[in-house]
Length: 141
Image 1 (spheres, one colour):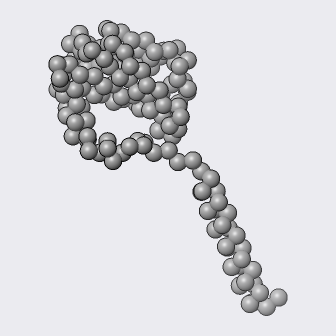
Image 2 (cartoon, helix red, strand yellow):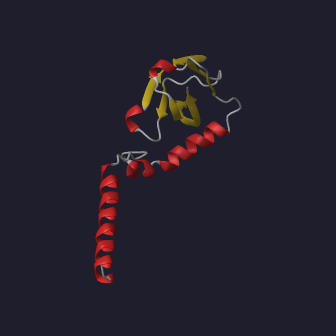
Image 3 (cartoon, rainbow, N blue to C red):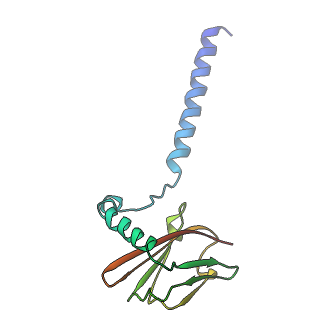
């Protein structure tokens, strides 16, 4: 076999390799962190202000991950009309879970309602037109 045939065979094998990689990459599911990230970007200042409001608060919300539940302890000042608790799975949007409730001193969320893995937990609420937001990473086992 002369060198011309070897070059052609090498090029064909390389093209087949690249086409295989492209096919694998095209079939892979890609989730965005936010579907409406342009709109979310416009409201980013509000989100930063809510995080600053939470950071300046005297008492913080505590979040504990236990074997059978997640315990969220709200401080006494946090008497919001409604609180949104969002568990976001970074690698699979279909496993995101959101709870909306009136905050009581202690909230138990059974881990049976959540699949196992790592979640970004965001708690949002407002008190007297002042918005608060806290985020923490939680591992469900």
